[in-house]
Image (cartoon, rainbow, N blue to C red; front, side, top):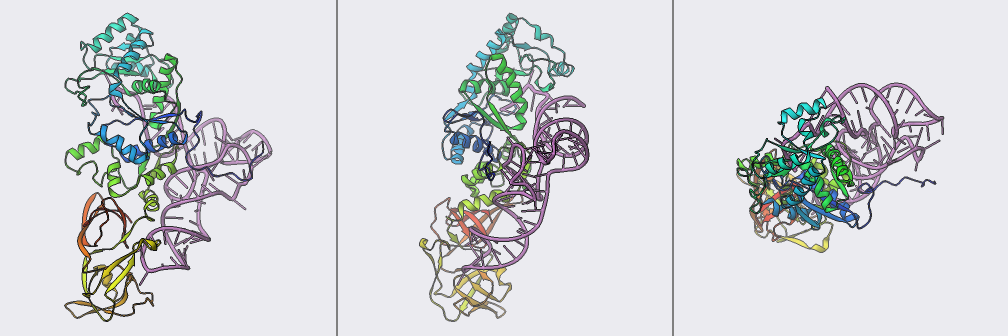
Length: 489
RNA sequence: GCUCGUAUAGUGUAGUGGCCCAUCAUGAAGGACUCUCAUUCCUUCGACCCGGGUUCAAAUCCCGGUACGAGCACCA
């Protein structure tokens, strides 16, 4: 075979194995115990991008089968699809809610018992752990089918309580990997005390499937062809493959990604965030200090920046730690060309202008796009504001206006207008006219703290959500005419 | 402890035996442009974990070591 002259650098995501255009089905399966976080975005972006690339489908599946340890948050069922759509630019093709698929799971559980590749185990967790490590078969494993079915009834009808019994999948007890030996498929939950938060479900079921069983059955029912998920679920794949063999099904193609840590963020789990929010440590899921999708969105990170970010990281199994600057760089690329320039003066100091100048100053809305027009500053009353920090030098240039020399008579500072044309290398500073500026706040979230930087903002009428570039400061998202949410510099 | 996985510049990433004295991005430094510390453009810096082996040839295959991560939950 002839080699090409030069190896091309692969663009985008690695190729999907065994994929047929139009026949690819992928899924993203979060636990709706909270809205989506930054990490979830990877699952959506990667699976969604493949679905799009292969003209296939993306299923959004709510894995809400735990009512005790990670109880679902009702609002998440509404919020997650919205967030997924925002991030992807399209709606997931199907939405599946595991708690509504219980009949499927029961049906397959019974089939598993009837065909004798599953059994009801009445050992305690500790007892079974010993069997698992010593590779010995649990006594319950030899239950005959009718006994298993009878015990199953006791699980479902409430005779048994949580801890009394679980349904296990038969594997070989001498499997090399201890994690796979006779793994548990369904267990009993106390849904009287911990009802499922969805009123339709509530306390209707006592026996609930565990992730590996639920996910395995659901993937088959939905016709999933490719599973791309974190490598922490590698053993899950192996467990599920064992179950698929029992059922005579073929397991989907799988790919994994490694752990991602963002250098600036600590470890955040959805459960922990939920506790912290409920404890009042944060102002809700979209608190800008939180790594949730809603917070990122609120602070001005765009969906396309998030998509580019995750696609660039790809689907490697390496555990990585990325700095936020990588995300910001993508974000700058996605917003700068559109972002109108505005002036925001922190710690404003008033200056009286002395000398000759015109009454109006025009500066560009966007320096790279003159067609977007000019911003007009009225300086007829000779009063302007500049940042205190910029007053360290006495020779400065007011951006787009004039060179000035500062004069301090001990009480007030005035500015002697020098050249209107720029004719030296003195520092250029941004400024605002007295008329045409309003008191405003720039909200920043730094070092786990929300800060409100007061100052003066150029009057504008940009709608809520507009991304602007605050000259010499950075990018920000317009909240209202007097409030900006800082994005990054 | 048992099991599984990963290891390319500061950070990510491409590379599946010869095109590789290694790709692209980001970062840092310098410069051009610019009436923003923005954008854009240019230049520079900088890496195949270690040790064996297979081969005419290894970042790429094999073995060992080391490091890091994950699973071993009646969580997802």
